[in-house]
Length: 209
Image 1 (cartoon, rainbow, N blue to C red):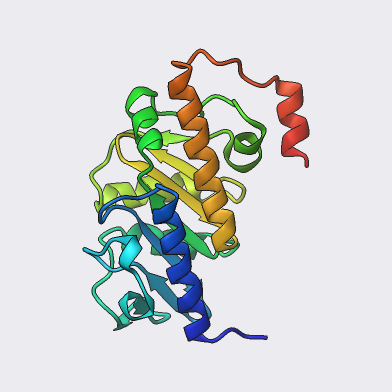
Image 2: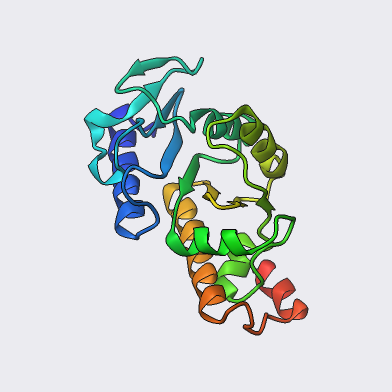
């Protein structure tokens, strides 16, 4: 049965609050975007995710024109571009978890950043690529992100000194990815990058689950 826009808004607001409560965003940082039938829902610029409710959600039509709510987040071009090139994905979120950002400040950009430290991280987000720093909201960032996440099956991308983009088929899927990356980043920092990685044979078994 088709869900109403009000139902979609309720779930969107709840996801915003979960991201805040989990410490994956703080202040007015981080943002969320989701498909809602023929519409797109986005977090508004200048608002903390803790304060997003059904009246503070930016609603765009199929042509990406704002039809309801406050002005959209400055990261809207990145999210909307991802949902366009990834029809298998419903949700795109950008988080600023402290451990994620700390790890991104230490690791080198490339196709494989955080080592395979936990089964959950391996299942949801390994290998985790990382882009070099690009200015938030810039055309260069939007294009670079799209080139990496265009491939189905790659649902997470680390941004140097900036945070993480996580894609999900559902809100829970996207939040799970963000949480697993935050945990892996925390472990990496606690062990000063010296933790034992999982064996390749075990990685293959986990990815095949």
